Length: 404
Image (tube, rainbow, N blue to C red; front, side, top):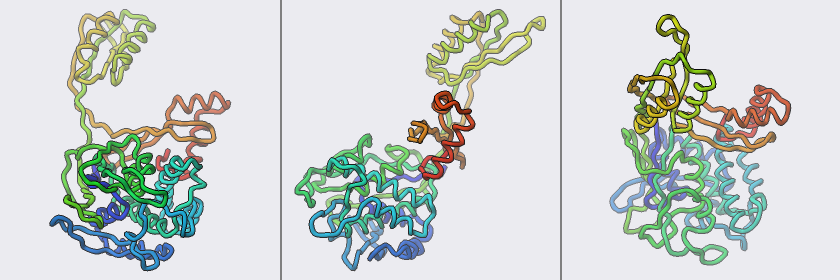
């Protein structure tokens, strides 16, 4: 399985992430040409080699009206001396990009995370947040570039290391704030972070939002076969190499060992069998099912099959003996290949629905949770198929990351 691992031991900013991903892109020069052709207001993007602590990497520079982004209050918004841009303004700008709808949806989803965080900090709805216009153009460029690159690299899973956010304080238009800045801290809720030894802001709101949106998991580097490595350099110099490292590689599809327990039954009622199945599921069985079989003297019966993790083997055997009439249980050791699974609750016009997504082996499968669909169908006098079609149409029109 093709996987991307992003190492954030020196935090993350939008330009650093774009630079690291650009290094592992098969045609980085063409990417620079295409992002410049988007004609983002006043923006020019250039790619330069950069060295930090003896490590050579790439720094992508974004200038707005000839002014380098590093001279802006990157990631923070100056509300006093410049025009402002609203979230609706961003939507209109992105709508005009010559990009796929998926990439446009990704850009707006990342921006929504930032707007919601700023709204929480300032006590306003996300729609009322105003972004510093000059700073917004370079942030929009960084976000757009990262979304384009991830879409073109096509990893099936994205893993991110715990994020170093730095420590100390940072100056912005509202005064001196603690690190991580309030908006960054809000975005990184439920994400493993640490301060490290550097007294500086290492993770910006833009970097945090990109990581939060795209990461499937925040973990230490998994076992993987490395294909490409990219270093995205920051502009500041520290005692540690100020860079984000992106590693593109192959990881082995998940493989499990499970225990299969079988027994034949011909002298139990349907109610007794159903009770035994429920007890096994309640105790942690992965799967329990029955199969019609012919037994001795051609008596009709059933074969009860229980699949469970190895660590639950003894407990399952005890439950089978206790809750069935069998006096013998057969055991098989099985290898199974499992797609990675995730679940996301989304809001639809019919109510909240859990969307289950499975990925692996070059395939992605997504479906709405049966219990949620059945509940909506009952409450609205609709069939299951009608509810599924309504949800699918609504989600696809809205362009959510998770598709049905």
